[in-house]
Length: 310
Image 1 (cartoon, one colour):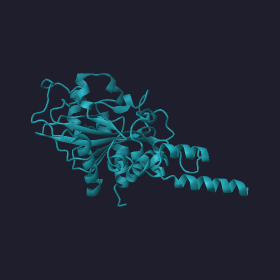
Image 2 (cartoon, one colour):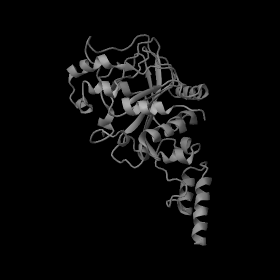
Image 3 (cartoon, helix red, strand yellow):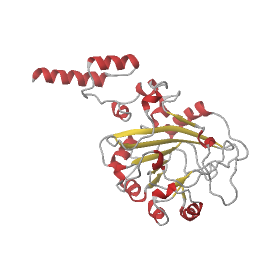
């Protein structure tokens, strides 16, 4: 695998809370995921955007902004279903959080179309629906959020706007996201930057970072992205999806193609874990008949032989 990021990218994220990496994914990877987005969401946006806010008023959240979200696994090919588990994403998260084991606690595809909603949002920090307390001042105790761009995103295609941590702290603390103060929105505005970029780019930020969604204005426009979030696997204070709650979705799309390391990001025990016995392997194989459980069987056999020799 070619190098997708550098130590400078990780350090930029650690210092600024954000980093944008253009062309993180290869053209082949991008094309495969784009095909899945078209299969799942295929249509064009409207000729005119939906704009409800008054001139000079900060954007607002509204339910229509989130109607284009589907959580993995999705009924499409492995390309989209495994995109959030790309080995380079795992590697970045491990380096950023300084851990050997990370857990994928949010992974969803998000399609936006011109005219479906007024996508303008106020500046906010994500920690309020990722933790019951607040973000730590130690970034390794927080999480790494990725926005994977699968379509070309210009300023007319609703890019995320963000404020670096140093700039944000000139105006407000993360906890000020709870205030709902319109004056604060105007104070933050001069510091905002854009995460626009070509398809295949990666935007990385933290749960303490001020950011907001922006409106789609391109005639017939769309924006295809994925939101993917990792934490230290031993950090129980942060969560979003309960994967087990989504049991009716097509999990075989992931189990039949993922590596043990990728499955561990969902909490599946690694080969060699004491959980795996002849019984549990048989039960898991019944649930996912096409899952290649060879690594789990081999690890169990090695553990059994080791006990016999002891």
